[in-house]
Image (tube, rainbow, N blue to C red; front, side):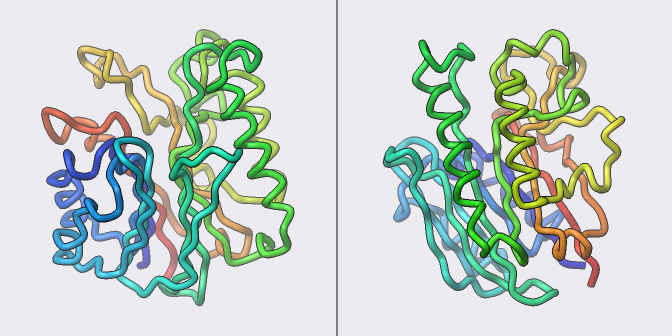
Length: 267
């Protein structure tokens, strides 16, 4: 059964051992990484090739951001797009066939938005909203009608059960109404399907991120679902399951604050 995973790794070089552990255990056909935090020539290509991921598309930058697609199947038409006229590495895409014909996979790292949810006083929040608006305009292109997957760290938990407390987080960046409305509008723009919620009911609390600030993240369980995998309806029809790998949050003394999200497709 082909699988695709997304994971904000928060420095691929620092956390390479847990990436290797994940690949050994789950063996996804495609892994999309965000916040690789390295330049292209610093990416640990050889170690990942040795695990069978000989096809790699990397769009990095020094010290911050950066995205990559690792694949067991060939990648073609590799490209990256800039947003908001800001030279940051937040998108990469590639076409591949991992079981159902060619599909273009877009890997995004949407800006976090800073701490203050006010675009007038916080440039980072303005950047986030502008980024989402530009994505929305781009998705009007007819190419997004079919055979598309978009995934990554969207830095927004759109539903009440995607956060530990809807009421307490309404004024906290990642769950404010202006952000959730923007993301839900994006979802509806081309009739994207949220593949995780297609298989895990919206009534179920579900998180993919837990803050480093919590002394015991597992006991406190104040999480948010920031990491997403969406697809056009033709691709979504072939998706058979989804999971969030919660234990990965505790896989090492210095884990990422995000965990992998995986979607499986029928063979």
